Image (cartoon, rainbow, N blue to C red; front, side, top):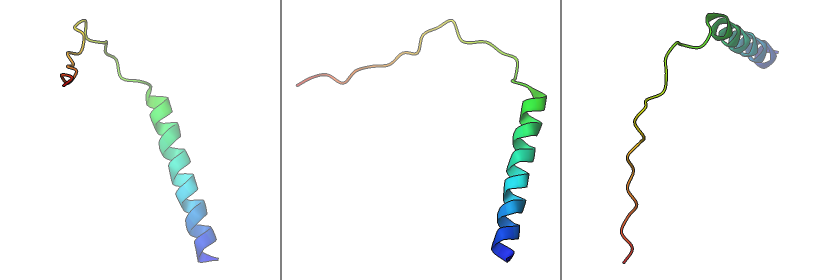
Amino acid sequence: MRALIAAATGLALAVAVVLTLTALGSPSGGTSPKPLLTTVPAHP
């Protein structure tokens, strides 16, 4: 019975966190105009 209560509590907490983050919305910002500089290893 304790496991069921713990699982229900954890699920309720997870749903509350998701709803809170959804209510806050995504942070304002933009993408960088510069491309990511990546290198490919030299082939032997």
